[in-house]
Image 1 (cartoon, rainbow, N blue to C red):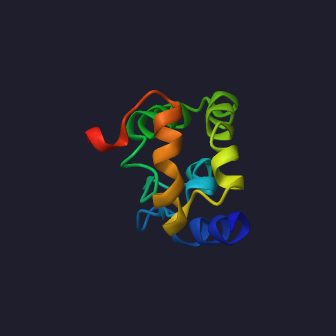
Image 2 (cartoon, rainbow, N blue to C red):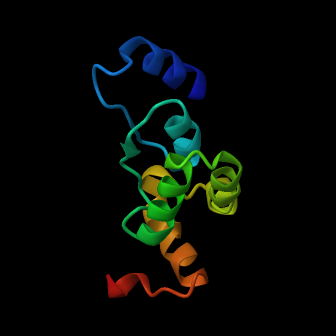
Length: 102
């Protein structure tokens, strides 16, 4: 969770690079020092994740949080982790992408 990740980031500082592994906590992890993430929906929504990452990396936290909140409906439906493989294609189609085209 965010508390554990923040404690870990504080302890390791710049000794190692931390990565987020949770789509729904990515923005929080990045703000606490993650360098990137290994995310279930990234292969299906690569432009979204690059845009979100770049926005947060520039320190535009309000804009980054607003972008990240666009994933909340998918998160509420269990569209993260292993389950994300089942419903992220629907999210990609909703954005006008054919997930089979990748």
